[in-house]
Image (cartoon, rainbow, N blue to C red; front, top):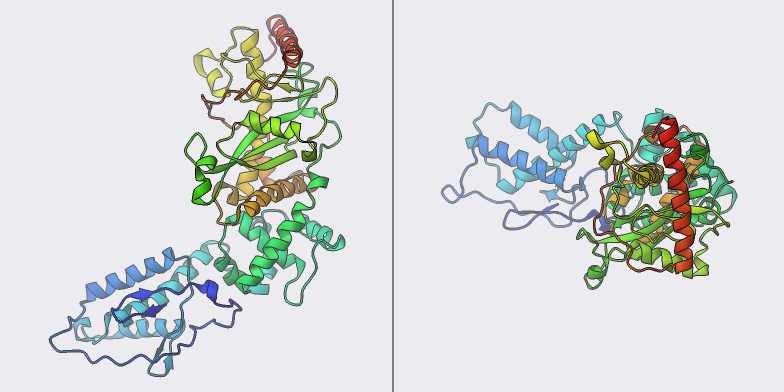
Length: 488
């Protein structure tokens, strides 16, 4: 922060500093400020109210500026630090002299108030979040040795899961300890960024490392976790317990192996590409094709498509490209898809023109009136598992809710890494607090009335197989519903 000749505060971006932690006090300035002799008639004395307003404005400005560190200032060879600024304010409060008699310049008062406001803002926000969060190694010690809730909040997973992941990355040689940063801290840096969508300068302050160090370890960890995708984004042993243990779905959907849907993630792209990435809602996004099991684990993720591209086109591109390694579909098995996809062999879609979304079956007209409505309702109930998986994923990693200002290939890789971590946590801790919170719940899905299959990619033979399967399921389901009236 510096003061220009007009008396305005100028903020200096701390990305240019090393962020090494040596600048606890305000950095030393290089230019001496000239003493200003006030003119008896040319300068307006500040009233007590104006001074108070300046203090409040400066504090709000500091808070809104993402807690930027105070920068160099020198006044008459005397360095200013935050503690000295606060001391000046305390001395002013003890003065009995009217503020009109104080000869304090506007820019000096704002400088002192801003530094004090910065300190006050930090102390208040940190107290509300687990008393205090020390920086550097102290921060890591507090997180890993403190309450479980603190670890979950900062690292987005339980302690034993975090330590197990560190062991995996170290044991396989995917990451290595450096002279100043252990693997545990490298992973914590990455998790703080994707788990809170924090900017580089905030992570610099928290871990007391330079911006270059933060960026380097972020990219190294991102690459390491992405390399685990072939292991953790794979179909687990065949299991449809949610189907087999529920007579609403069994035996009707016994051959269903998972659910497929598109997920739109906000994207940051150059102006020349924005028209292609603008989706139907007018938001810049990347369209991510995802497949998941009924255990909430992702088995396939394909990010990076423009937001304007229809879901059915993305699926067709994946199926036509063997290099994408889409899990092979065994004979007679299929995925559930919504109305944005064609009903074809291996992909079972609901009936078009029939109410489908769960909210349409609430209230006075909740009971299905025919076999197609009953099929659509149960199809929608079962397919809701992927909405729950998306909800847990975005809640754990809020960076997926905003458009991070990284190169697009980094944005794409972040999606893959988040899904890998999602599966890793699911396998290591079945009682994870976020998975537990969504257990048995349904996530409302707003219908997209423009979402129709872009093109009919399926052959007539594939359509006949899928239509015949759907008709047989709906008929059997409706007969049991009428005769047994158990639950619908």
